[in-house]
Image (cartoon, rainbow, N blue to C red; front, side, top):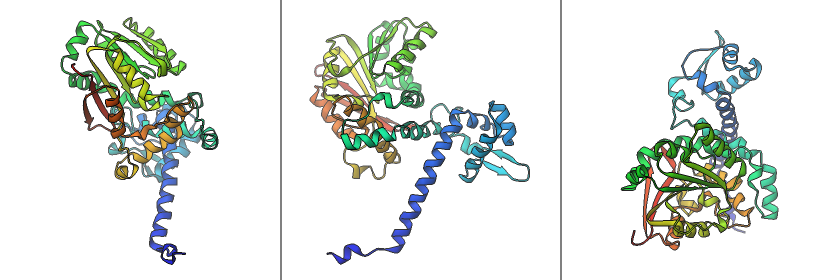
Amino acid sequence: MCTACSVIDPARQNAFADRILEMFNGGMIAMMMSLGHRAGLFDLLADGAARTSGQLAEEAGLHERPVREWLGAMTVARIVERDPAAGTHRLPPEHATWLSRRNPTSNLAVYAQYLPALGAAEDAVLAAFQHGRGVPYSAFPRFHEVMAEDSGQTTVPIIVDQLVPLMPGLHDRLVDGIDVLDIGCGRGRALLTLARAYPRSRFAGYELDADAVNRAASSAREEGLGNVRFAQHDLTEWDEPSAFDWVIALDAIHDQKRPDHVLHAVGRTLRPGGVFLMQDIDLNSEPVENLDHPLSPMMYGISTMHCMNVSLAQGGLGLGAAWGTQLAEKMLREAGFNRIDIHRFGHDPMNAYFICRMPAQ
């Protein structure tokens, strides 16, 4: 036995224990942040005014007792400031910047929702560790809701003004009228934004989850958008040759049963001069290279709980969210895309944006 291998550094041992305790506290506070976001409490506190628990509860239309306990959690987490003499609580403006809907592109409380939304499926995920067949979409009833909020502040705000201009000539073509497809469209927020901006173009959204499709279609009807349609599709066997001028896939390819098949189908469906925009997770395919990425633990956690599993549940490859830009680019090239440009945006540290074209386009 290697005696050196059994020597323990007490300082390192204790530091690791402290780090684990920080993780426990952070996980609990993330759930509290999710509650505060969903209940609208951060949005009320964002004005900087000091409130008692009773005042905050009354404004929010909630019961005082759980609000008081939630404020206790926010106090010990040093998120809100409490005046014990007055019994009031205040959210500093520096904190409100990152925790309220007043910040449409960088509300970090949105991401706190992933922890409880995915944790609800823990038993099913644990069972999947044993049987290896993954976990279906139906085990994650809130996932598309959270994803819609996520994309609503990362991709939707920039898709018209910043993403479309990255593809020369696309804006003018959209103005004149072309056919656009969003694969894995979720609740369709990005596609609805494009349909409003370009009324002469025709938009289609394909999604495996029936509930997400129904919600997207309902939103289109409510807005009176006649140039957009949504349909439930298993993209594994999807094939529509030369049907679209622009295809987008926003944080969706790695979830597919067979991402390789889908990418080949994208290449076939593009007409001459067409372009494919793929947004996906900006990680390295080698885990060690992600040690310094600020969100890599979160991404691997979401992938373990959801992304990998929903693909495996379909009998798929189970690439997971952390498949990495290297593998993504390799698979794009194998699908026939030989012109690939990768873009990143400062407000979105999670994603890379691949602009892909076929040969002679």
